[in-house]
Length: 502
Image (cartoon, rainbow, N blue to C red):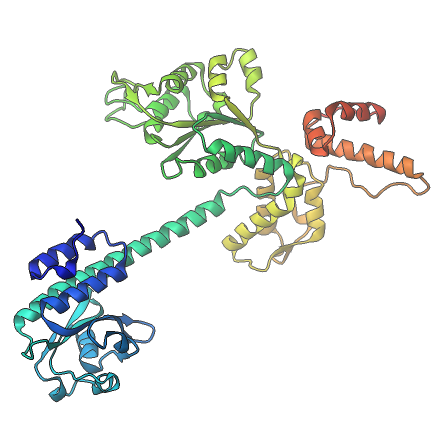
């Protein structure tokens, strides 16, 4: 049964009821209304109000008001130091006024304007702490015509304390929410995948479909293509997004240390193990574990990883207690794992466990349409770091980047922009500021006097050559980009005597 605080007449009962709501405040306005309604009932006042300080105008405004003129009084503001409320807010000291009209601190203007006779008052400060006064709570006129008593003042101060606590909690919660939103925005900007090319959009769409499941996935791609960003996107859009995302680079650690990092260890497991350590699998419980450079994992660790994937159970190094975890595993490699399996360097059963779904992160040469937006993104990052707010990239510099093969992919582009920002004139990035040399053919250099068919054949040959360079000689990818059948592409390669590119 839901309790209506206003129906509770005992002061202690009302205080307890409100106190139970304050720490978990969801609707601050409703809670403040209940507090002021309750104090009105408990001290048997004709009217009560809660005024909050507006630091910008240095004045108090009526946040909540009860009584016959409750709505009318909300039109008014009280300057700090003026009137009973302003005086209490400024000094931080409560006031008990037996005859308001004889007190020189009383402002008659509000009472006269709303046609309300003020006889007696009690007013106490709203304090979040001793030095932070945020407003006041006041009651007007005893309903039975008598005076407010010191006991009424004590009750008023108790309710004022609850109101201050509720406001402080709500403001702290709002600060935390804002901080979290700012942090999410900052992290989102830092780890967003930049680009609008068709090939990139397809990968992102596949990743978004995958994110809805618990399926393991292997992300393949050259170094510097953004495999970790894709893993972050999958986690961020999954049902596990509010749980941990743990990232471990398998190439960064030797076999013994990698095992300890993955599974943790017990005290005394080896020399230097002075206490128990939690591993990455435990840390990622109910979340996602991203294993980068999985192709570098030693065979011994591969076997233990396979068991966790199959059973969801593992043992800490030096331990004999089975630990059960619920972890979604994503992995990435720049190696050809099928070749690694064929040559005996990677377990075939583990490969199939990891490779339930494979996502191929395209090389930058396969998505040159994205070079401009990537360059502008990195430029904005370094402009913020250096304070060069007006720095731009010249059209010629942008053209040069569009004609480069980018063997180091996005990482190389980022480094090139950073160098150009640091070493340039601080006004405009020019072609000579970029540490690259154009490697792809330009169009528009066709000889005069060619027939239309001859010109079209020259264009087709150059276009196919450029696309094959983008894909590193991969005919299937090139055909997909050009939206033609692979068999037709092979016939064109033979017709135009184009040699495959490695």
